[in-house]
Structure formats: structure tokens, C-alpha cells
Image (cartoon, rainbow, N blue to C red; front, side, top):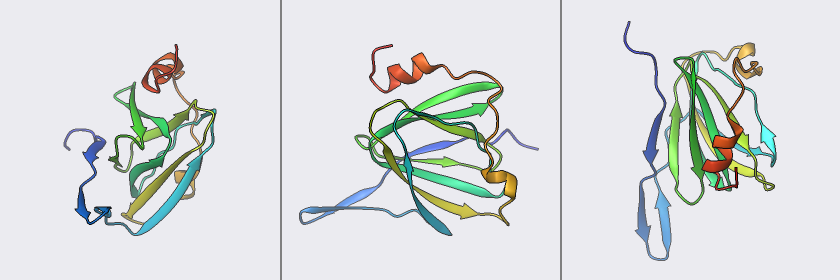
Length: 141
């Protein structure tokens, strides 16, 4: 087999049309609008048969990805729109230490039937580095 699956961050493509700016939609089977409440420290999730394509449209949060037995932390913010693609089999969670909720769009690509366990939180094998999340969010550590 090849290397382990990795997440991908892509800048959101856009074009101006008069006063409006049009952003390229992401191909998907299902699109969800998701709100992550303020002061949330989410457990991990893994999907076996879907690719998540996440774009924060209001607020900010820290996406946590567990790969190679280490957490990676990514700041996602409305101020710097990027699409994060999370392939099947990658454990991921979210941290929103802000008071305000964060709203995101998840354009889901299905690769088979969803399994019940895909939406069941998984215990974190290691504690999150909340000081790192605070620094990424621009909060005093």
C-alpha cells in the first residue's frame, strides 16, 4: 500500500462579478451547514466511507487531526478561507475556545454506505494541547 492518507488544505478559488465575489463550489453528494458552539472541545471522529471538505464561513476554530500518533493543529477562519479535505480513515476533531459559535460548510463526498460508527465520538488517546490551540486562535496562552 501507499503512504497514509493526508489531509489537504486548498485556497478557495473565486472570481469577481461586479460587486460580488463568486467562490467555486466543491463537488459533493451532500452539503451540510454545521455550527460548532463556543467553548467546545470536541472528541475525535473518523469516517470510513466519506471525504469531508470543510470551509469555515463565520468565526474560527482549530481543526485537530491525529496522524502518525501525533496531533496536527490547523487554524480555520473566515478571514482566510481555505477548504480542508479530510479523506476516509483520518481521525479528526475541532476546538472552538471562542465565546462565539463557528459556522462551517461540509461538502461531503460519499465512497460507500455510511457506517453507524462514523458519527460516534472516539476517545482521545492523548490530551489536546489547548495552549497551542489558544495561540493559533490568537488568545493569550
